[in-house]
Image (cartoon, rainbow, N blue to C red; front, side, top):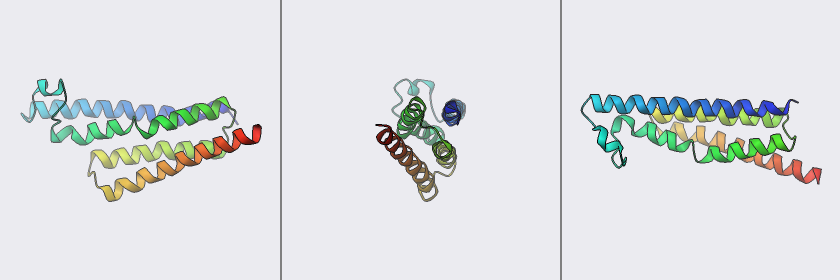
Length: 139
């Protein structure tokens, strides 16, 4: 299998981060234009307006669990352990982040957001387990 294929789910996730940054900027501009926020309050960002709060929280989520995703993908590629299973799990993780984010920036209903998070979390655990198994079997 092409070992660089693992980079595509990473690129897909990076694209999601860019989309969320754009959405955050748009929602903040709308809050200022609507009179619900002042530009100066974003200097220290202590009071995020309701219009953009869910988006800001969704953005913060992209720098928590996904950091482990990037690390395991790079480790899988470096060790030559990318196969159909690891690639599929990487895509499951990336897609779960899109679903999680969509729910987060729209309804933000935990009953829907939690399963999306759990699917990605389990895929990530599986990636780390597969990396460990591969490393143990190579040694």
